[in-house]
Length: 139
Length: 139
Length: 139
Image 1: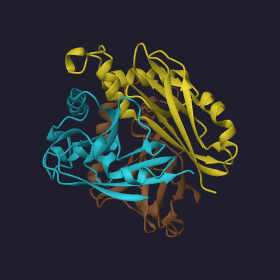
Image 2: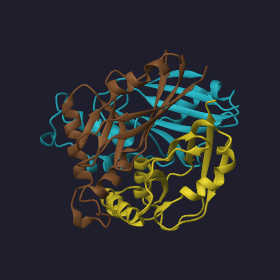
Image 3: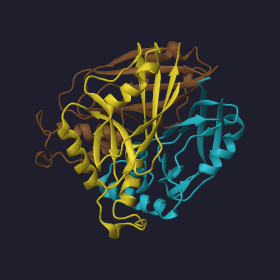
Image 4: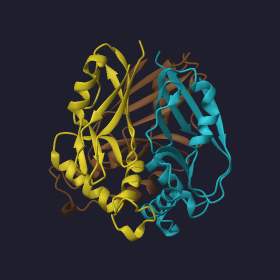
């Protein structure tokens, strides 16, 4: 009831991972009538969130919005050893969060009509990212 | 141990739903000695959070603060099919989050003295909103 | 499987509490093969988050970033009875969040290499802060 999911390296930006997570967890989820799915991202320069999953423009707008909230101006930050996207990544990771918790109903994630899971990759040259999925059955 | 709660349509702004959630879950919670309550909002243009629940000014100030963080200027966004409050709603929903998780102690939510549950409605003309509450007993 | 942890009063800023939480929960966690740890902060003017836990500059930069996002200008807010850090504290608490949920593997928190738990103290003269830790075993 706990599974590690490795996400491939992705460019800086917001990416839907709904289908990938569904596929990886399909077998485990199908055995759960009711419960909760917790998906935890083991990193401090990326984030995981739930957002509108139909229009790809949302992911583009979202990254622009986050760049205005935490601008990539090197002179604003002390922690810049790994470049101008170093501290901004940690700040955005903390603002968005590193886990999502989703109800399970009848063997599937009970997401709303428009909801999907998004990986927010904040580094310009990131590698693979690791998720730990934990499934709690309540029956 | 899973219950759907329908919230009535509310105007754009932050609204305390503490009493409503307590009332809806009272019977289920009263059977749980220790555990966790997960409340999930099935939408991408509203959010759920825990905040100061005593002074109504907090909810007014909070909405102003969020409007400054993600300003409703149409020209900033690609995703505007449903109006100037379309993309701003998705962005704020993702920043605040679509679920809260609260400990249960002796059959009640173990909220701090000043804490309450707030629905953040980001659309000008929203309809009903749907919550899925999941209760995990650990005993 | 539920434990109250009292944090000592800390100055305004971001503080790593990873070691403190590990120490307080070591005995309970060691009995859990797989599961989830939920840590809930019972306050509305502080927050709890997961962030880079190696370089202390991250915590300094993070507080500066949050101060730019929700500036401490009294004239912006209605809710100022307890000073200029009153409403800003509530807003930041809601943006960052009052709980973290972490997978447990082989009796330990399964945090990523660089991840740690940070208390974000937003008040200038705060007192003790109370956490409620809940551990769910899934085996």
